[in-house]
Length: 67
Image (cartoon, rainbow, N blue to C red; front, side):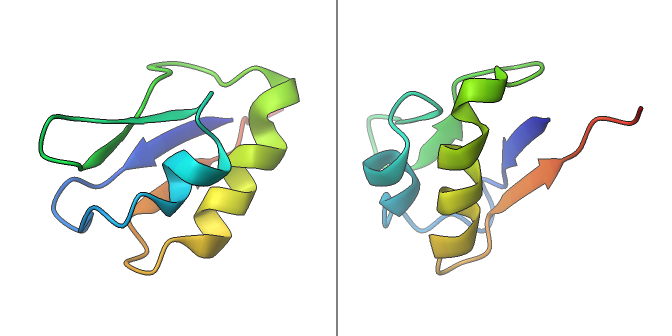
C-alpha cells in the first residue's frame, strides 16, 4: 500500500496526523504529507485507512499493492 496526500486539496485540518502520526506529518504551514515515500509497512495500514476515511477534503489517496 502507498499513501499520497494531495497538497492542492489539503486544508490543514490535520485529522490524518491526529489519527496516524506514524504515517503523516505536517509542514511549517500545517499542511499534511505522507512520511513514507514507498510502501507502507503493514502494521500502519489501519491508521492510513482511518485517516483516509476522516479527511474532510478527500486529500488522501491509497494505492493498493498489486499481487
